[in-house]
Length: 115
Length: 113
Image (cartoon, rainbow over all chains, first blue to last red; front, side):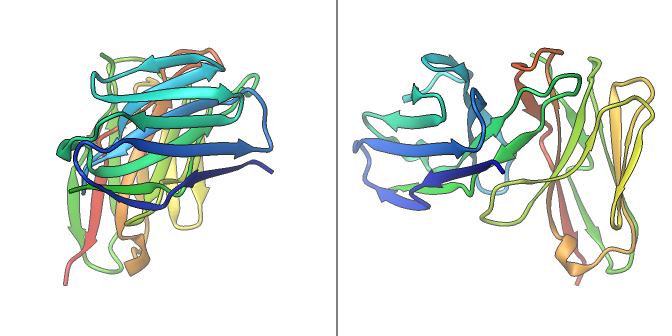
């Protein structure tokens, strides 16, 4: 069966420091990968979307970046964090089901607090 | 860009009440997904709908794929405290297996004290 894991689960970082959140998927190949951010009590904001290695679509202008160095690995980074980067970050994957629409599955989430 | 309009934004219910929420779009979708998110966790898939008119149940939850393919409904019968959370509808943009999946803004369900 497929699993998705992201880490770290919680992170407290000072303003201006770098960020690296990592996500891996097991049990499937060539997944679509996503990074979402969720402010407290709010909806899901799509940050990045990837359909393959090295193929990253940025949905919202920001100081974050994403990379996909391997098929099932997705990394969210920042060189210098802002206070507004605080939030709950979710990695997700979807497959390639023939004849049916995709279903998306989420990781456990990572809480980032920028202080 | 395309978006899913989810309503209501929030609702307060008495335990035991039935709950209804819906999701609409200006575009046709070939798949409708409903998720529930508990505090501090990632959303979990509740029901997936793949065919216009389809009615699918998962325990006390029932979801329907609207016949116009532009809307979907989620009903919860006889609500209990663990139903509290945020419910999201979602669907893929396009028919390709690489289609991006977008989400509604969510319906926050709370139990009235």
